[in-house]
Image (cartoon, rainbow, N blue to C red; front, side, top):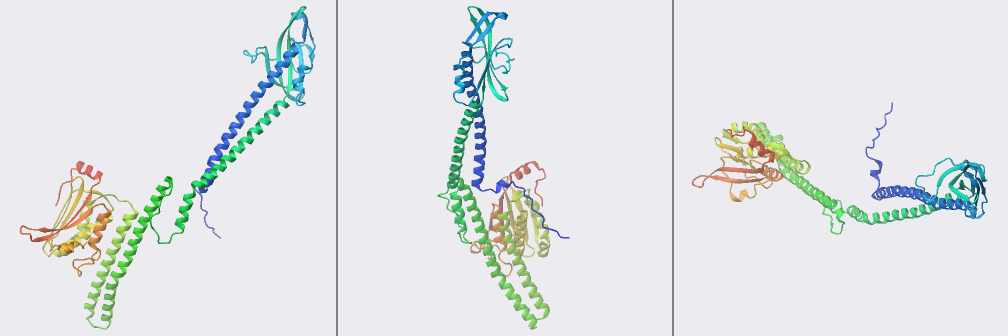
Length: 496
């Protein structure tokens, strides 16, 4: 049995993949075409009404011409009509050799007086408000298998010998009306087609000109070198493209910063790991030559491996700080809870040094990555434990004043001098080369900067200005939710 690759189902409409020019052409021309079609149809209907009005007036004139040649003898029901229809009544219809006219003259009872006997008798009624000052009605009918337009005129006829009412019907075939309406329709459609072509040409030219900066920008980016992440010059670009250019420059700046960070990480890693690896190689060779007892050689190798592992972990932590800052959004976390969890984690080290340890916290919700805060607290506590003498003191306090959270880690170590304080936050600048790699405080500084905070190292002095220890002070802004929680939570009391 053979299985083919599953087909990808398109979830987006096909028109979204069209070019900008095609979308504009369709988006403008299609509504325009619909409007033109509606206008053409509406104009055609109005033309038919106007032509009917004009030709109906001619029909009425012919009917009146026929009525002028009527004579009557007798009165009312005994009246006898006589008709002599002149050729002038038919001349207006037959001069163009396109339409034909038929007429019928009868009394109100429908008795034929003159004309075409097979022309159907009018059975309608005169409108309440006829279009002309006469008893006239216009209607459509079929005569001898052809559509015709009929005008019926009820005309009083009087003479010295009698008086009665005559019904005069005049019918006209529709060739002339249809030809005139069709000619007007074709003329209208030709003008509309010219207008549509002109709109299409204007759209193409305008779109071509409007999208020229986009094509120039695309060509400029394609011609750039692979490592060229310099900002795009948008001084000559249209205002509509400026947000796109600014966003692209922002992305390029972040990519440039990230690339520089990665290059620096690779450079520092290759430089810093080379030394412990070289030392490890020498120690292994020495152990193989039996220069040292096996246990001592293994202990020295273990120390070197531990230092290399610590260095690698700290360098990875430094890279992760930058990655989190660039790629993810922080959440609201409880700094005090994270600090207490880390304090529990390092408690074996505190017990090993027999330190007098105290912790004092208040609820401090901040906008941060949980991993960052854990790494910050872990590095500060590790430094404080490392530099505090045995049986010394180590105090940690976290306060919140409504605007900022303030962490103070106080050890009882020897403190630092001013010259060393200026470079301790630089990577690989350790106060004691044998005790660390010099990355702990650099990681702390990067974390604090990523979270819009600050960090400083201050010597704690006594009454005679003697140094009694070092305070690592970190401040970060509280979230608005954190301020409300401090007000509403009755358990936000200091504890030891």
